[in-house]
Image (cartoon, rainbow, N blue to C red):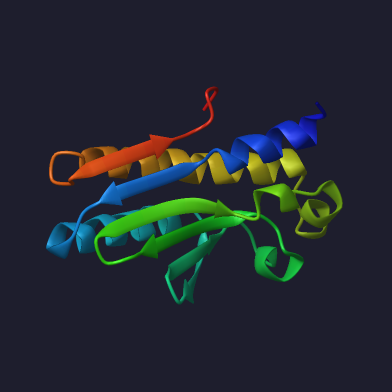
Length: 133
């Protein structure tokens, strides 16, 4: 397996889900959004919540990015387009594919810490990160 394919597969494993509603759901969502924005991600409103781009032009170039969704009784975070990780496109954004991958992993780790803090008030919390994260 090539290095780029391994990074794509690992990005595809990232999934955070909390079965939670009401004020705690709003707090979880806002804390994740705030933390990732503070970490340098660029938020963009979407129908289900927000896209969080790891760098300028990631949306235009079609690079992988974090999605944060609020589905009423569920808050979810996943990677949009994990298999779109591409060396040439990353370089067009001013990064290597490895740097882009690392930025996304850092964001996912930070979000996972917040999801874990809400475990006691949520009905359930699923945190799926690659083994070496």
